[in-house]
Image (tube, rainbow, N blue to C red; front, side, top):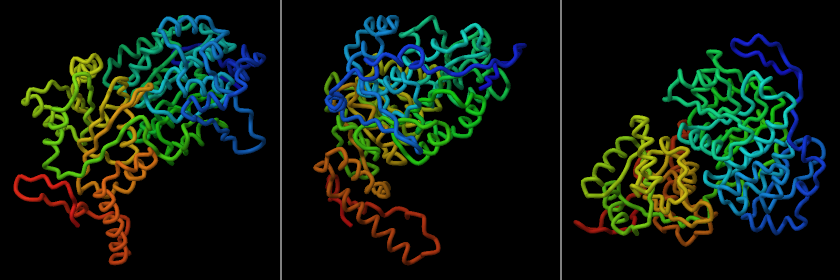
Length: 494
């Protein structure tokens, strides 16, 4: 393999060298790392039944490394990493870490289906440090960074960079590249020499197209929250970026869901990966969240959210999701007028205001954050107790993302979702999510009737107008009426 190390302004020629997975350097002969646990079924059960499968399409399936139950089993040969883990005070690997580390340290590509807040960042970062340290070309001989982490938002990129700094290894330098930041400053930092680049696809593609960054020396690639990057329309930029990265790299992909787009991306850019997931690859919300669904009229939403806030406990921390920036502003203003301390997060706010809002929420200076989906991407706050879906999301995958913002790191959480007649297209999928989470008792009868009505509507529309098809129909889904003036009849009538 010839690795072109000639970057912008570089006068060096190509450097021939292979990529060495960490396992081939220091781990291959250490059976205690690969086969440290005879009773790995017990560990798998303790780890929420996380399953690891081999996605190799041809030939004999490979041996799947056993999970590690302690940090020492994974990193006994790396005292600097162990010192950092002990300094932070972690006592046990998270489920995704215990399954991912043996796979990635063995040099295999990995797909990890995991929500934000499950420890997935360290699941790929720590093996990435070891991978870079084990490469035959030293840092001063490389023409560019050795590790690239692509992530959907600046907020998530900044959080990952903070983790890099917290677990600093061998003096590796990292940089965060994202739109809205100081472009000139980012370029200067790249030129000064960095080992790890954490970037959003848009800004990195900008630097790449202008030949301001050399990606040919990257041997360890992470596509973090791939489903969200695709949802945000970053696939063209990702494809352009990957064209400049050597094909024999090691790649780790994380995603909260496993839709068709993510499967296609994995098939195109990972080589014979293994996949780690909890229980099933069917879309499912985390089972640590108690989900409540309320069928309401649009004009009732504000009274519902005010009732909810009035009943909050002092230690509660609530993330309220809305569908539009204007709604975020209106709702947060109304809450402020009611004497409620609140922050809002959406794309039209200045970057400094967004960062302040997020920090206020993280530090519990405010305990209520009103946010749109795009602005909240990468929001990683571990102590959120409730998610309140003021507006139903545009698709069921986004619902799972939202609900997964609570009930993290071994904690339980709760979600409240307001559903109106305009949301009837998604009623059937929502019922399936509740059933998969073992919360059949939480499926309102009105939601079942709504789903049945929509299915009937689709069939009737297809029969009456077969040439049009495709469109699910407009309003009229819920058919709800209030039961008298000032009353709150919660039933649906069709």
